[in-house]
Structures are given as C-alpha cells and as structure tokens.
Image 1 (spheres, rainbow, N blue to C red):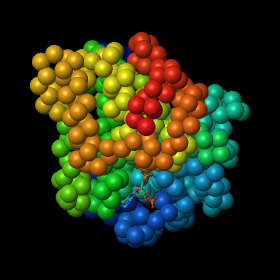
Image 2: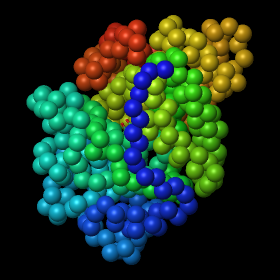
Image 3: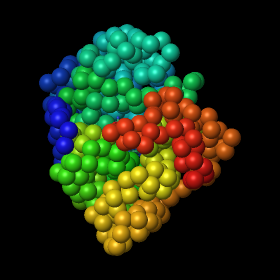
Length: 399
Ligand code: NZQ
Ligand code: ZN
C-alpha cells in the first residue's frame, strides 16, 4: 500500500438522543453560535427545536441562519459569513444534510477572513485559491447530520456551487474538520424515500471510487470497503420500507461517516471521476447528488472499468452481490446487472433525460467536467486518463 498520514480529529458522539446533549457538547468550543440549517425540513421534523432547546438549557447563545438550499450556493455562504461576523459568532453549528454541513464549513472560513468564498474555490478566475488553500483558519464547527449520505459530518471537505458560472467546486483544509459531530440516528427517521435511496448511492459511490481507481495492494482497505458496501446494500431497502427502523438508520448513518472519513482510502488513495462528472450535472441542473451518481454509475462501469480494471469490478460483485460468474468478464456483466437491480429496488435507477438534462448540453458538460473538476486522471497510477470524449460517451450511454 502507499505511505499515508491519517488525521481524523472530529470527536464523534453517536447514538439515541445524543442531539439532546448539543448545548453541553458545543459549549467547549464557543459561546455564541451561528446555527446553520436548510430552509424547511429541520423545522417540520422538530430537530431544530431539539437543538435550540438544548442550546438554551446550556446557556449557549445562537443566531439562526436557515437559508441553505440543496447544492449550496456561494452567494448564500457569503451572506452567512457576513451575518456571523456582524453578530460576532465564535462557533458554527450545522444541522441538516450535506448541503447544510458544507455551507456551514464554508461560512466558518468566510466568517474569519471576510473574503468571499469564491476566493477559496479551486478553479476560480482570481487565482487566489493557490494562496488560500488549504484552509487553515475557520471558526470551530460542530455538525449534526439529519441525513446519511455525504460523510461531511466528520471530514474536512465541502462542495459549493457558483450558480452564475455553473461551477461546483470543492474546498478543503485542516480548519474545516468539525470539532465534534453529533450523530443521532433518530434524526434521520424522517428522510423521505428518495433521499434515503440517493444517500445510500452516494455512500456506495464514495466507497467504490477509491476501490476501483486507487492502489491495488491495499487489501485491508478493500475489505473494509466491501464490508461497508454490504451494509449499505443490506440496510437501504429496510430504511425505505420502514423509515423508523433504528437498526437500519444507525447502520446507514455510521457507514456514511466511515465511507469518507479517510479510513477506507488511507494507503489506497483514488480518484473521483464519477463525482466530478456528477458535480457538473448538479451545477447545471440542480439535481440531487446521489441521483446523479446512480445515473452515471452503470455507464462508468461499462465504459471505463469493464475494459481497464475488470478484476476489481468482478471482486466487488463477488464480495458484495454474491456474483458467481466463472471468469472476470462474466462476473463484471453480472455485477453491473446486480447494481442496476439494486438501484431499481431502491428507486434510484434513472436516466439523464428523465431528470431534465438537455441532450444539447452533454458536450459542454463533458468539457466542463475536465476544466472545472480538473479531471484527467482515470486511475491513481496515471493510467486510463479520462477525456471529455469519454465523459461524453458516458453521458450519452445513460441519456
Ligand atoms: O433543504 P432542507 O429543508 O434542509 O431539506 C433537505 C433537502 O431538501 C432534506 N432533508 C435533510 N434531512 C432531512 C430532510 N428531509 C426530511 N427529514 C430529514 N431528516 O433532504 C434534502 C437533501 O438534503 P441535502 O443536504 O442537499 O442532501 P445531501 O446530504 O445528499 O447533501 C448533498 C450535498 O453535499 C455535497 C453534494 O455535492 C451536495 O451539494 N457533497 C459533500 C461531500 C462532503 N462534504 O464530503 C461529499 C459528497 O460527495 C457530496 O459531493
Ligand atoms: Zn458524494
């Protein structure tokens, strides 16, 4: 395996009713919080009330910023940063899905520097990102996920969209590691069927991308990954059929965290081509991230992996979907069918056309994936570089 440094400093509080301890937990990090959340779900489900009650009980002051949209935008982040500065907040609490958590991280950086978030974003036209990355200064962040999907709760990344230029880009840096993450599975009981399924596909993709594209001599990491994938597949359908099944929700939530906290890919690395292709889709069409990944996955397997690393996909099939095909090629075909079947069972099997993408935009989006996402590398070892032409073939395959 490759040499690696692994640093996962987020203190995790996991379990039933842990949300009720929010006030006592965050007190260690600040006195006055900007409480960052989405526009409606946390009010409807009661999770916002739980957090506020706990803050009040612990005498922690807060200002509510409840304007985060799915696929959070740079303009919203800048507004949050301005409010945090004006209100002299010394702590950021994120309550919600990946969008609220990512926006909260970006706000934590903007609140300290007073700069617009575009100055931190890779690929922006000012060139300032080189000076600013990785982000070393931000207000302390505490995350409280209400949806199992991104793993943003305990990693140092965030994804922000510039809706005007249709660029969705990542920011990252040591200061963006949340100080603490409060993982209360009951907060995810109310996630609707479609987002439960999209979230499952998101964590599954976080797991397979490193597994397919990284160093191939990392068996411990591969087996960790396979175990986590088996859990996503086993519990996603249960959570869809029985939304308040605690066992299913706790396994999905912990898997989402473990999938992208660094452990699975340490020493294996990897590239994230399917993520880059998806980020272009949601930057142009504002679709759900997990749904975009579900659309692209079968085509990526058919066009890239089946040709260049079939043995990896065959292994995934055998370990996760009990595929029995005698040789690798037979196993690959069976695996792609099994994954498509799983997507159908959980309701994420879809096409680009069906989510509103115009065929005329495919070429531009393929080029944008290379330009904005910096996508060129197919595998970590530099083999199979992915070109705009190949991305176009992938988009067309699932149109
Ligand atoms: O918008 P609100 O009202 O909050 O409702 C949300 C939203 O409409 C709703 N929701 C969340 N928790 C709920 C709930 N509804 C009922 N009950 C609950 N308990 O679900 C909808 C989707 O939420 P969102 O946060 O947008 O979804 P997700 O967690 O999938 O986050 C997606 C964003 O994260 C980025 C994606 O690109 C996308 O912008 N990612 C972040 C990553 C990271 N930081 O590590 C990695 C990922 O690969 C991903 O790129
Ligand atoms: Zn993802």
